[in-house]
Length: 476
RNA sequence: GGCCCUGUCGUCUAGUGGUUUAGGAUGUCAGGUUCUCAGCCUGAAGAUCGCGGGUUCGAAUCCCGCCGGGGUCACCA
Image (cartoon, rainbow, N blue to C red):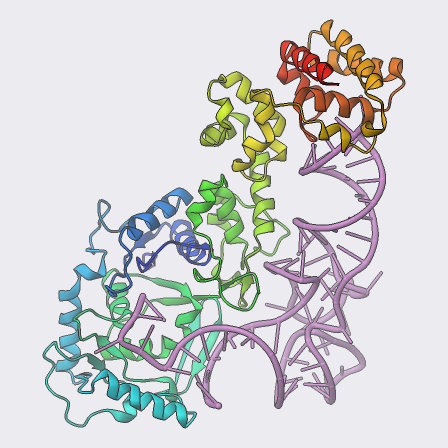
C-alpha cells in the first residue's frame, strides 16, 4: 500500500488562526494515524503579500500545538526539498517547459489591462469569464517576460472527495489559468500540483475555497501525465455571524494569542477537532492519542461550523480541571500575579489547588489568587454593597469578628479543625453562614468571592488570618 | 449571472425509512452542594428537522421544485 503523506502548505502572509490550524490538524492526524509523514511546505510565491517573520511565527504555532512535521523548511529538511516554493523556481520552469513542448502551455500576449477588459465584458453580459474564449491563435514564444498559461482541454469531470463524496462538473468550468506569472514565480494552481507530486503527497487536505478549481487541477494532472493524490475538502470555520468564513480581517485571533492567554494546547486541539468532526458517539473531549486513532475524514461535517469561543472556554476549563496539580503548576509558571514572585512552590501549589476548578484559562490566575500573596487595602464597599452585611451595625460586625478571631487563635488551621470551629461559631453567635462566612471572607481576602472559606483560611495560615482580621477590626 | 458546495435547539452536533413524543454537549434559567465565584448533582426552557409538493402504512432520512447562506469565475493563495 502506498505510503501516506499529508502536507500543510501555508502562505507566509501572517499568522495561523482557528481555521488554518484545523486544516493542519486534520492533515497531521491522517499522517500520524497511518504511520505516514506530515510535511510542512511554505508557499511563498507572492512576494508582495509575504510578511517577514511569519514563517517562523507559524512554525512556532504548530510546534506549540504539538503538530510536528517530518519534512519541512530550514533545519528539518527532507529528501524532497527545498520546502519553500521560492527556492524551487527551476523545478517549476522545467515542468512548465514540458507543457510548452507538448503544446499544453502558451505565452499570454495580452497586457493585464486587456485581460481586464475581457473580464468586464463578460461581467456586463452576466457571463462567467473564460480566458480560453480569447485564446490567441499565434502566441509568442515563451520568453519569461509574459505570463505562461495552461492550454486546457475542457471536459466534464467526476471525482471523489474524502469529505464531500462524489462530485462532478461540466466542461464550462475549465479554463486556461496562469501557470507562471510574468515575474517568474509560479501560481499556487501550478506550483502546488508539481510539489504535491514530487513530494509524493498522497492526501491533499485543504479548505473549501479551492473546490471550484479542482476540475482545472484534474485537467492539469492529465496534461502533465502524473497521478493525482486523494482529495479531501474541509468546510469553513465560520466567524461569529455564522455566514462568512473566519478570516483575519474580522476578528480571527492568532492561535498563539491563546497561548498568551493561558489556554492548554491539548484543549485547543480537542476543541478544533470537534469543530466539524465527531466520531458518532457522545464523547466531547478527546486526548491527542484518541484523536489519532479515532479521526476519520468521512465523518467530517460538510457544512461550515461556527467558531464559538464560549465552548472553547468550557473545553479549556475541562482540561485544566483534569490536569495533575504538578502539571498545572508547570504550565502556570508565567501567569502568576506579580506579588507571587517571592512565594515558594509549596505555597503556590496549595493556592493552585484551591483555584484549579475555577480556572477557564491561566491568565485568570492573578485576579483569582492575588489576595493569597499580598494584603489588599480595606474596601468598605464590600460590606456596604453586601445585601445582608450592609444592614448590620458595625458594632455588631466587630463582635462577630472578634469572636471569630478568638476561636481562630486556638486553631491549628487544619481543615477539620477550621470546619468545626466555624460550625461552633455559627451556633454560638446565632448567625447564618451567609452572614458570618461573608464577613470572614471579606476580612481575610478583601474580595467578594474566593475559594471555599475553610480552604482559603487554611492556605492563608494562622498569622495572616489573625493579622488581617485585626486590620479589618480597626477599620470598622 | 454561470458553476459548485451547503441548510437539525442560540452554538457544536447525533441521526442514512419505523426503537424519535428528534438524543447529547455547550450556553441560558431554577433548585441542591453550611457562604461567594467556579465546579459538581438535579431539573427546566430551547428545533413546526429552510419552505412547498410527491413516494410510502410510515420521512429529518428517498424524489421533484423553490428559497436562504457560502465559495468561485485573480499574473492571491
